[in-house]
Amino acid sequence: MLKLLGAVFILTATTWTGFEIAKIYIERPRQIRQLRAALQSLEAEIMYGHTPLHTASGHIARQLSKPVSLLFQAFSQRLEQGSDSAKTAWEQSLKHNWPSMAMKKSEYDVLKQFGETLGLHDRVSQQKHIKLALTHLEAAEADAGRAQAKNEKMVKSLGFLAGLLLILLLM
Image 1 (tube, rainbow, N blue to C red):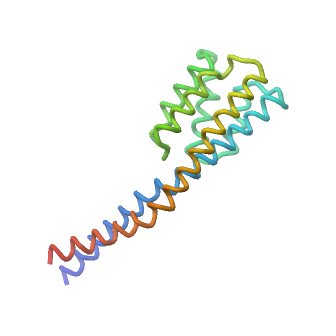
Image 2: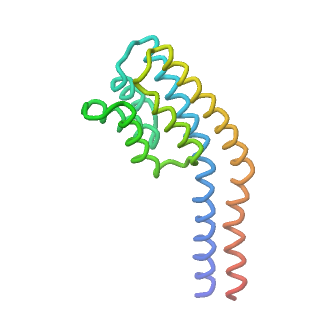
């Protein structure tokens, strides 16, 4: 009876681990889509609403779910404090919130490069930089979708099968 209970615990733990690792493959495309939507909203706020950057970021943060909303919320708060330039506020917000995101370094580089141009140009130039970032994020989203299709089910199955293997080795 004790062996059976131990086997159930091992199988549950390894299966849960597989599902947790697979969550990264599920979250990455979703978060990239949210970032794309956020940048499109930012473009609209800047171009058509003539909204200040801190106000636009606050509006966008309220429309998104965590952890992407936290990035824009932190950016908005840093801008409202007035102590940072838009570039510095974006970089600090990105560094602070990046560990909670399921994205890779390539997305970080795109967002950091985007932050380099924030608040430095007129509206038309800013729109071009937003469109460039959107193009890069679109390619990253396609890559993330391929990785999800390729790896999600495998990682989940691997967690379960690793538990079965461990049980067999211990019995």
